[in-house]
View 1 (cartoon, one colour):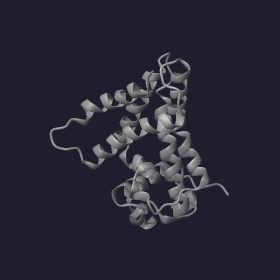
View 2: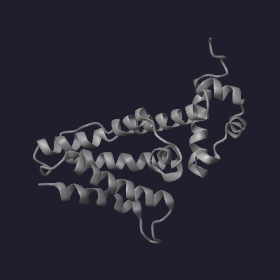
View 3: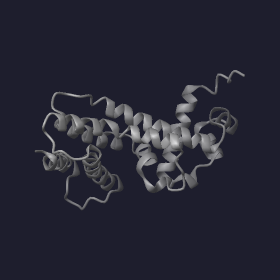
View 4: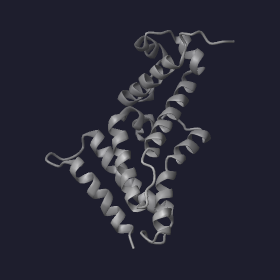
Length: 196
């Protein structure tokens, strides 16, 4: 059966963005299909038609968040300086989190603690880690980084980026400290720590 024209991709995108915002502001428990339909100016029938049910909507929200995050990281690309690429990936991480905090929260915040990820979603999330691991492997191959597990090095880089971004998004930075000014320096310190 052909989906009615009003249940199109534009409405799907609107519903995903609104659902991610609701989850960001109050967690999954605050997401009701009636509220979402009302805020989107549509019907719950449209939501069921596009996503099947609330679980299908949440699956789409998560997958879209992972897809947009992966697309942002892919824009970084690769250069002939893989250690610098690691820093650039960290900068892209922060930029994405600040421009799309609702999507960042869907992937990385405890606001979705009651949302169990499927195996497919876990695989999609793991794919967003690959550009960083790839840059580290290239840095090791070029002699820039120490010989260690690339995943181990990537985890330390990710932890630095994630920790600072989480502090920034939660407003937990002490007064007088400028996270924007120190973020890149912090990333570079981790890269220097793993350098040969």
